[in-house]
Figure 1 (cartoon, rainbow, N blue to C red):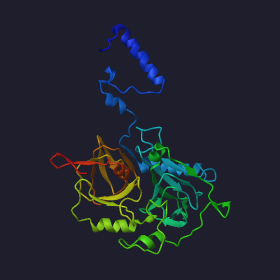
Figure 2: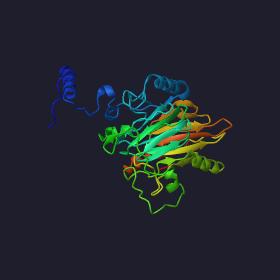
Figure 3: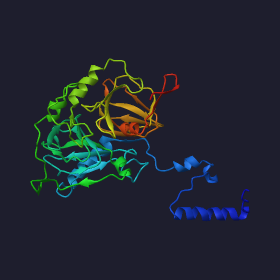
Figure 4: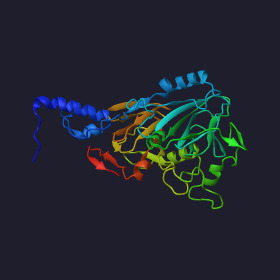
Length: 375
């Protein structure tokens, strides 16, 4: 026997009272509602979403980096970085839903004290010849285009050993780890029972390149369990090698959707350097325009050299060196280069996390506009 509907005069008041109780008791009504066009799913997924967005290095980031370096002393803080916050996710510290990009300027001879955290991170050199990172006893001086790993739970510190300011960008899986309630930090690094501001070097100069720098060949006589054991033991990837490979393939037929795309990989097992995120460099050659690509992974795209443009959903962005563009998941993206020189992009993605959960998919459109499933 079905319940009798209440009189219409009382129903609106009863609905209002019920919804107030549901909200007050920290619940969510998962059913169709007249004021939401009877779309119960739309209600469920109507929370904050990342939006396509571009941060200009020249106009927005660099001036504030210089000003923060002038006003904020490293004697008073262990960090001095600018985190890019997606307008669709604000005030949450996230550039896309799972990752964030931050920029840092270190002035001459600045060294930050060591710390560690459960989020994994990378540093990518933009300017300066003496960017410095110490990771678990390996001192690394890196140049523009070099990528340095600071895996989860590794002690690391940053700085500048040169006589001119040095700028690098960081990418962290901080928002993902925070959502999993697994985020923690450690400070006050000690050696011999005393807190120190810089780790002592325990490995020879260029250890990562010496041990792992020859593709396909792995020394069996060294301990590869570094950085928690599940991330790449190669802590620095030099741009010199990446650039040589990009230009070696410059005249090859490439993916019409991704162009010339090269992934930074784990030297022992192959695949991404981290379980949660991966990194690429992409060359968009002069006169090239990629076909539309959409995927469930989020992307952070930072031009390293050259100029061009990209379309992200309904937004179009001009690209200049060291900008960052947020590409939210499930958003169509295309790259275009109308200039005489190649456009080189540094790209971060949460693809490994999605693959681990069986949620990674890619779709493309053909030159005729037909939809095809790629992955």
